[in-house]
Image 1 (cartoon, rainbow, N blue to C red):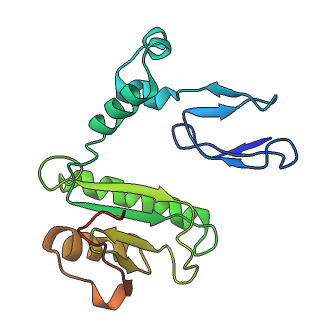
Image 2 (image 1 turned 180 degrees about the vertical axis):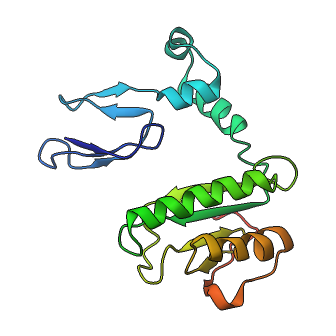
Image 3 (image 1 turned 90 degrees about the vertical axis):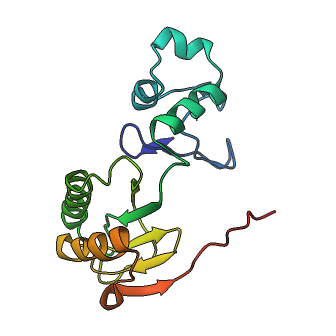
Length: 182
């Protein structure tokens, strides 16, 4: 079994298909070497849920998940930007630089909290592996290329703050419906 990913992010476990015949993606329940599910709560999740190790063992997963979501303001943000950090569309170093810029700039502009809160997620691949880093802004479903510091500054100023598409960086648009899929 092989685990990849950063601490505090969903750990992707590639499981022997003969033993398990699946890929396990849940960050809170990890398969043990014997194939049995063992409960695992990351340190980051415990910190966000504001629970001690002892409390985490007593609380059910749904309570912990709700606390983490509340701490992250999930359900309370206007926009969500997903930034690809490579390695196919850009080098890992370029991706890390873009991510650091995005985090810092959103904080400087006070877009990391409050009524204009922009949620951000670092992703490993958005599958458009050309002219990266690439990013995606929801709810509009706007895909951008060249999301380095200069490109991100334009995306932040025009799209995230003013709601205007940055035409010269636009790859595609795929807005999500207001209606929930059945």
